[in-house]
Length: 147
Image (cartoon, rainbow, N blue to C red; front, side):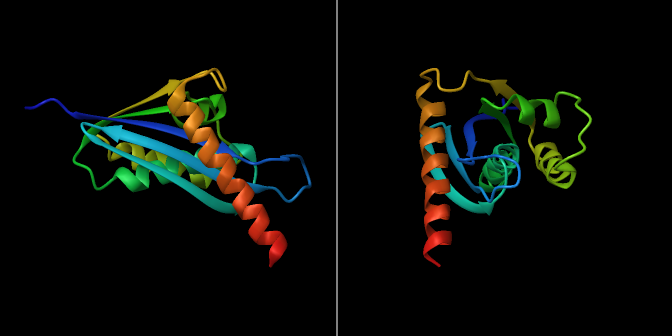
């Protein structure tokens, strides 16, 4: 059996001004690459929280690469919450349906791992995902205030 193709995915979720009771706008950034191809996505998602944005970034990444053959998917994230909720054995009370959906997508991967990267520490792909997420959240907020 040939080795599984490796797909590296860097994800970040942004929700500027995240605070209880506020209407905050989520954006996600994704950088994915494997054997000669690279893709980026910057998606505005609407109101939410930082934690939901981080989870949505992983969900959106897995949805966008699911047409790839079974692969070894390595998700690089600075979100301890996402890692703990998805593969770290944390008991999930909030965002439970979203976590369950992501776990179903994870099961479709030949192999899956999550890699913790330090946030805002100079990793170029993590920084790019962060920039894409922040830009998306700002677009979402601008569209909401101009409507």
